[in-house]
Length: 147
Image (cartoon, rainbow, N blue to C red):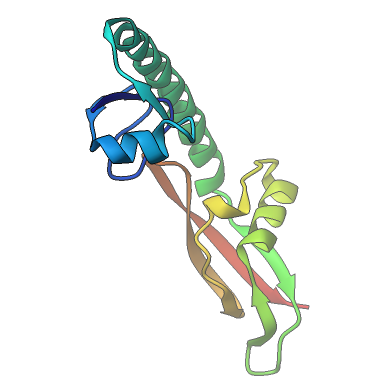
């Protein structure tokens, strides 16, 4: 069955794509959940408009992510944590703490889910990756110092 996707579906396609899927998959999952609708000549024109709108929004989001990257890459983020005498932290520094410190020190708001979830467990300088957009990834330098 030919359907027009209203949302991104893993291993099927992106919003606005006209794809051929199994009849049961379309009838039992895609259409009832609102992720797709049956394709016709009118809906295919609508799909083209969705693709254009999506590509414009995607380009705008990518530019915003690149701007964030230029602001963040050059500035290290400092986080203070309790540590033992040999440099091991009591606990760890998580992505949410990195996001909070980033917002406080640089003014750039990133969701914790955009930062790789490597828990930092030692004092020192670490590099974590951030991906605010699927096509933009950049490193964040995190300096963990003892309290």
